[in-house]
Each structure stands twice: as structure tokens, then as C-alpha cells.
Image 1: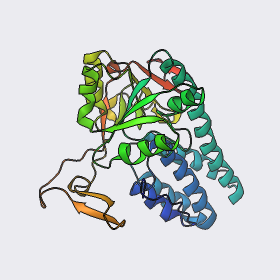
Image 2 (image 1 turned 90 degrees about the vertical axis):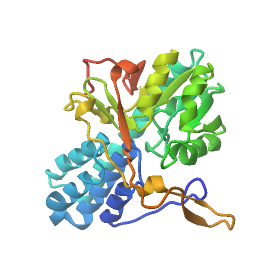
Image 3 (image 1 turned 45 degrees about the horizontal axis):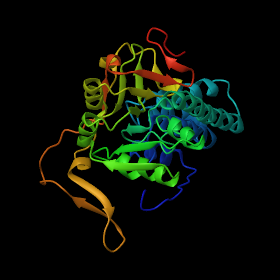
Image 4 (image 1 turned 135 degrees about the horizontal axis):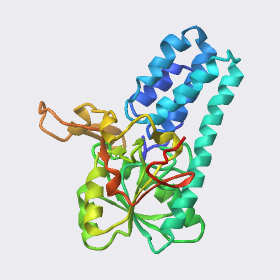
Length: 317
């Protein structure tokens, strides 16, 4: 478990892939889509008879908010209707994943140009790096490209309760890349903006409605309010696969509510070096655990995709 242990898990069972998405072993909208495409290619190879009636609904039901999942399932369904051999289905899935990598690289270039204009102290929320987005990342792609160009970006990393994707994943990624960063409590972000120590906020997205409203990790909406109050530019960086032109506004985006246990306990490494699970709250208390929230387009400075800055009224095709 990152950041304590790095492991690569492989399986030839499509149900293992579906469970990995469902349990957040695989998470992040672009990675969810790519994993679903590959899982469906595997299902086609080992259980073609149940592909349409079982495997497509199975993968579509794994997570409700990230629209990349549904785009990937739709693409694999279209491919399946040509009755391809297994190799062709695998090629379709790999092409889907490769397209995400290319989109992440291109959008990072656009974002780096924006961040290069005096904006070096960057705040990010959750994990929108290569762990969440096949390669490069979405929100962090521009940061990595700035660093590769010889710049010295600094990143405030929100820890991102309750699953700590910021402190466990984003900080680990940035540290591995040699990029200066500091982990902070989510509730410290507004204060750092008030002190003038944040030049820009860059986050990813799990779904973007046709009016530009953005669903992302819970806490993003609060960041947008603080950014607006303190005049800090806030960018959302996401590939075309994250846009949902069939969704009119953020009110139409389904918001996943996750289990109480995520708020009541925390995993980590004990003094003996072993992974362990600790209770951190009063047992039996009920919890409210929305995984995402919706940030209105009006609160954002820009939405950046691989095609450049997105303009409302011109949704991605």
C-alpha cells in the first residue's frame, strides 16, 4: 500500500479488475476508464458469452461518478458488436489507454504555459497524477512538464480526507519526481491563500457537465470559494473523456456516498513496520461521507483539456 509499499498486481480474471475499481484499488477517473476497457477486453477473451448481459453491466456499476468509466464501456461495447477476435478487443482497449496518455501529455503542456506566468506555488487536492490517470496525470501533468523544462514549481498538497490520496499518493509521486512539496491539512488551504502563499490551484475532475460545472473529490467546492474570495486562479485539468455533454449541469451528476468506515478508521504502518488499521472515532456513530462535490463553472478561472482552454457552450465531442 502506497506510500509504504509499492506493488504491481496482475490478474487474468475480469472480476478482479471490476473489484479493483469498486474498492478503489484502481482510482482516478482516467485510470478507471482505462482499467475498465482492459477488464472488458479480458472478459471478451475468457467469457464472451456473458459479455453484453453480465460484464458490461458489471463494469458500469463499479463507480457512479467518473464518466470516463462509461465512455470506456461504451467504446468497448461498440467494438464488440463487430464480433472481433480477442486480439482486436485487446488492441481497442490499449488504444483507449494510449489515447488517455497522449491527452494527459498535451493538456499538461497547455497547463504548463499558464503556470509558467509567475505562478510557481501551486495547490492541489486529492490525487490527479499518473497513479490516477494512466500516465503524466491531469492536474499534475503541467507541474511535471514545468519541472522537466528546468523550472522549480512548489506544491501545497492537501492531505485529502478521508482516504488521504493527497498525502499518500500525490506527495509520494512528487517526491519521487524531485518536486518540492508540503503536505497540509485540507482545512489549512484557505488560510494559505489568505496569507498570499498560493499562486494557483490546479485540480482534476471526475465529470464535467456541459455547462462547465465540475464534479471532483469532496473539498474542491470549498477550495473554489476560498480561491474566489482571495483572487487565486483555479484551474481544472481533465481530458475530453471526462466531459459529459449529456449532463446539463452539476445538479445532474450522481454523487457517490461511500461507507462510514472510511471516516471511522485509518490505515498505516505501526512501529513494527506492519500495515494496520486503527479506529480514530467513536464506534457506532453514523457518518456522512460524500466522495465528491460539485464546483460551479463560475468559480473557476479555466478548464483545460488536451485541446486547450475549454469554453462553455463549446463542449468536448
